[in-house]
Image (cartoon, rainbow, N blue to C red; front, top):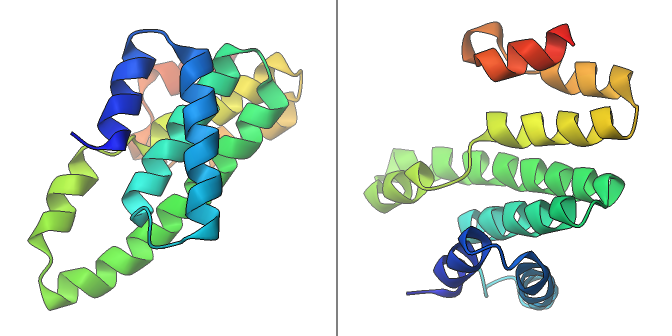
Length: 143
């Protein structure tokens, strides 16, 4: 069981303040030592950190962390294209357990809606392809 699994269990148990402290520490360590976490682990950690900030009702900060997570997801997709051409089957298993990019965008839009930044929320949701939109996303767009 690695650190990300422990953070996932803490988040599932509702220990958001502990998740926030531990994920902040790990993100700082990862920024100082880039080899500490893989890009996929860093993405997961950013999402859990943003979720804990969202739970503490710091929506502007949470939206910023979710945006950082989306940037990290782009790094993962760029590196996975290189690994796919060289044959990386382990990366496919890890990609299945990652939080969905669509869910992260929905959470960003939710933060913006709470902050009364409706145009920003609409812009984020419009960035999701219509085929990938869930009913939850369509309802938020309609509201």
